[in-house]
Image (cartoon, rainbow, N blue to C red; front, side, top):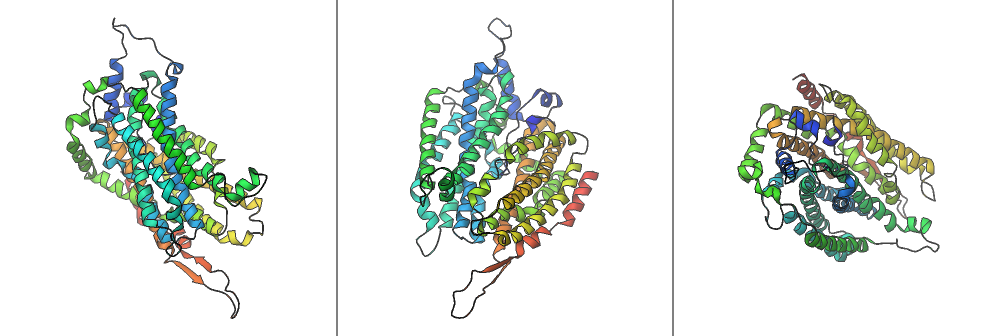
Length: 510
């Protein structure tokens, strides 16, 4: 499968697929990309009818840099949202509260619901993509400035109630909703911002930029916010706080969003030549697009496949969602867990390239079948890791070999994760109707991502009811800390929906 069809992301987000010559020959490319690609071709000839001289990437370095920067901005709120659960876990919030907050990650899995609006409604004189990009990024900046003033009080609470989970969830949900909308606008703009011969660099900007933004908002922030990390590596005299606080970090990026958006709105002109030729979505109208999506879901094969996508990840959702939080609860520093993600970046880049060689045949889901039981076994291994963690804790923290075991476990876990992801993407591309390939692909990818979100939310919700608590101590003496027996991980590790596996086999036989 062509690399341009794969856009990998840890948070389960699907991206718009960028057109390539191979995709065009096979008829597997989205409708809006087809129309905008034609708009690019219209400007490929000079006034005398002769083809224009091809421009190298150096001639468009400014556009590539702008795209890269916009994707970095998009990744920052995603990284911040990923760091909040670890901060809340350090403040001993309940897993029910964690389940509430997990709804924050749903917008990127549901953006198909409003993507047709972003494509069809805009202000012509201002620009098709800027009409959504500029106000969205302004709102992102304002939300971050608001959070810079209120986030500490929201996380700390009033001393009696604890963190204000409902407000935190609502604010970060809006933050992620805006980031998902910005993702739609930037993906569309990338197709016309770059020339035809350089449009392939858009997917590179997408992958690299969002990964860098997530790193800044998650790994870098958690490290700089940690007093232990800063005192150990960045200071000569220890202090009780980190180099930056969450409020400082939010304020800085809020200003960056506002300033950069203003510069883009004033200095960057959008090529509106493609507006002379309405896209097919505009010609059909927004309601017609939604009717098309509904008609696709009513197809028997698509309905069955979507049902499988929505249930396939139940067996390992608990281990994926809860393991990191349980390790933090056991005393593992959250910044150390975040830093363990750094060595995984090269592996996450190489794995899709290797796996894609085995998913290009007529049965790409064979890789999925082989990876499924392995991922279930690794989920059981994560359960054992959570059980083993308290026994190796020392006075000075955890030994080096413990972090080596965690790193190895995470690395092994990535292999079946990417095998399943690449296989599903390859299968979606193979079965999608070429006439409406973009709509088909986006629908299947959205359902696949949603199938990973709802089991994680449910698993977090069930942790407290399925966790038994035992208080140990002697009369007249201080009561020892609660000992928890984490039933939910053990039970979820063995939850392998057999009927789902059977239906997968039946689907493959089709």
